[in-house]
Length: 296
Ligand SMILES: Nc1ncnc2c1ncn2[C@@H]1O[C@H](COP(=O)(O)OP(=O)(O)O)[C@@H](O)[C@H]1O
Ligand SMILES: CC(=O)N[C@@H](CCC(=O)OP(=O)(O)O)C(=O)O
Image (cartoon, rainbow, N blue to C red):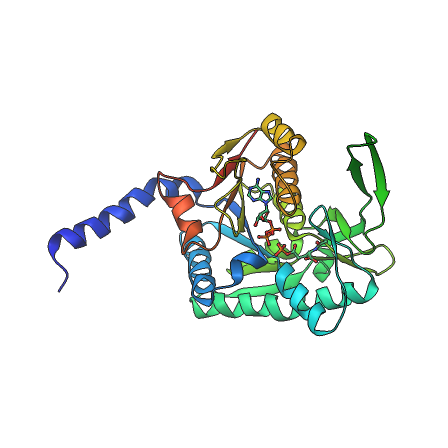
């Protein structure tokens, strides 16, 4: 039997969340769920519960998902080589097709089902649906420190969002449902563009004028060279960390996304550990936020 003290402490947890619920009701939160954070099925179920709870207390959650490791496994199974430049997958036509199959097919529908299991109703789409994300080829420059110059590298069908039409998201939300978005965009000539999921989430957050952008990954947040968590970052800090090599690989597009989003009017972007059960709820509804907060 549960004693009175335990019951009261449970009620206190809800009361601690009350001011946050009041403050955030009616606001849009974009939550990017990274492929590395998806590994454990019980954590995926707790992520889905968090999203359904946000919806239940009047917040509009918009989920954008990744799936880098899952695309990697499929490419391996099919015997297709794959390489990354600055955290971005070099994507030929065949790789773009496989990325779309894994992202829009398998992962998108798994998340829709998990949200359904948690008692919510989700609609799975990609940037191709309803003209949501128009993309164009990313012009990516790699910095060569020895020569102190930047070189243009061809990443194939890696896209960058150029226009976001949020009407479809608004319709889904108006119907009381949760949009779940795969990071695939449509090019001007009908091409399929593979878009880094962080970049996709940032563009959607900016277009929706979201209050918050959450990027769930497989580390506690941005770590310094000693492995300590950096809890609060401003644009100048990020430039310095990139220059001295503290930020590498997948963390580069993540922080670029945060900078872009807060520069476009998103109040704050947070990088947090998606492997922690209920990471989203702990960040939003408790005094002790977790992860790295980026703001201007
Ligand atoms: N300074 C840093 N702090 C934390 N992680 C970093 C840093 N620099 C590079 N990383 C790498 O970035 C990874 C997160 O990016 P990524 O692998 O693309 O994740 P996701 O699939 O969640 O988008 C971390 O697992 C880590 O290996
Ligand atoms: C261009 C590019 O790199 N696209 C990514 C899309 C998926 C993604 O970003 O997934 P995570 O968030 O799990 O890393 C890729 O092909 O892996």
